[in-house]
Image (cartoon, rainbow, N blue to C red):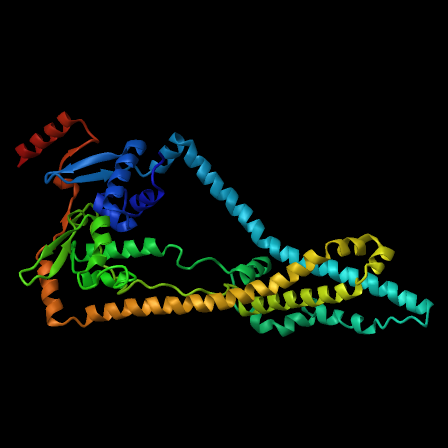
Length: 418
């Protein structure tokens, strides 16, 4: 079993010396999972246990523990290689849609030129030809105005916008967007809940946690604070009832830390980010849509020219090839515009739900910010269970870094000096 990457990241962020509560708070992990993961990581990476004189345990890791693990586990090497390879593959997939669009426009345009050239030649040889091809020819300046010298002038304002996406990446972003902005919402949720508990020295009331939860009153009985059950289970919390019958919660494991806490601002509620249509600039979006529309119109014109299959049979070569894949080109042209259109309305619907959930959390946060006397008394009762214990190196009774006999000798020497 390879070490948990989330625990490894938490250990690095916390400075390689941590308690179970530190990791559970930092990573938003279940306390039992954090404890088991730290034991496994210490065993595999050459970590040490430090026991405080209070009996609390601190885990100390070497700063090169990733190198130790990498040499020990071939699977970790494969995972790192896999991430790099997949990064390259996914980038190629992203730029392929832009390349396909350019290839589609090029194939369709060349085929139309060849057909028009052949028909114009036939018209010169036969004045009675029924072909009226002039209208089709004048389409091409419209089709390729994006590539004309005037393009830079027309889009100079849009080009001033900064974008981290190149042309091909912008095409992919226009088609499929840029991923779920809330993909790590659950991770953020538990990290923020853990931070709130830790900032309140391990003792809270339900109203302090509710702005970070969802579906309160739907999945759980809000009156009886059933929604706190998952929080208690994850962080090994304990409820306590006040003389007035109010419930508060304290979390012993989160009250012990090997890291000196730095007070910083905490978000008053869990904010869910709205979905964006695309990270491309407005100029890149207009360019993508314009090219997609030009591609589809050109494909429809080509389909009209290829009707019956006689022209393709006569000309052969590239025209015959385009005829054979025409329905693929048309499907790509339709999909290029339909997919972003459907995605646009889907995003609007999703964002209305995001706004509703954020509004619910904000309303719960307002209850806390304008606490009435009843809630203030409840918070005051919770503060009776608040505690914060920092374990420094001077508080250690035993460490696996050194032999027990050596530690006893040091302790005796320190005692004699005093």
